[in-house]
Length: 263
Image (cartoon, rainbow, N blue to C red; front, top):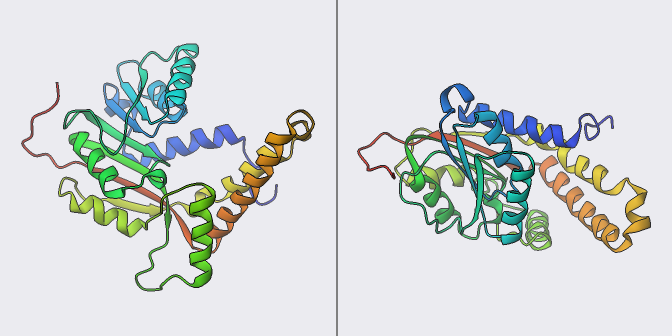
């Protein structure tokens, strides 16, 4: 508790993170009240619904995910909560069906680490963003190894994290910036490492998942899986703590060029 993982309600901490991410991206209800927003890798739509509420009824938020079950649940929750300006659809983020220049804001939170093709992921988001539009992304990154190569321990730890959570691979903050710059579509990219702001959440997740005896009593198999997940979360915490992993934050606007907008 002294170390941060019980200082704040876990759900509230997530909403506070979204608020900070909005600030980084220059996203606010005053400027973006009528914005068309794309949430890439929306999961069950918690962030999509939060953005829809924050930006107001004249904004529209579209969340995409590969999972039909996530779309179904996200849609149900939006209906239950009366969030009419959020919708969800099954779509491959690496090959989106939207026309060029479709969205005023492209938002991506913790989806990049799941993508098997980082270049296609970035290129598609830049493509569907309107000229002058706002892009903001949060993703797990490994440290840059160009100057200090990974040690054998680093390689073993990364392999564990890839395999345990079936992530294809991580890249560095610097590499993501290079990919964004290579599109030639974006203005100067702001990058930050939010490790210090987010590291407590890994052990907080363990606390939330493990320290409830009802799980073992009523659902022992799921509880044992939770214990295994807790070990993985602790390994991730340690990777962030020693600088092997970084929490990459990115924000940029798209250049204003003569390009047709989607209707």
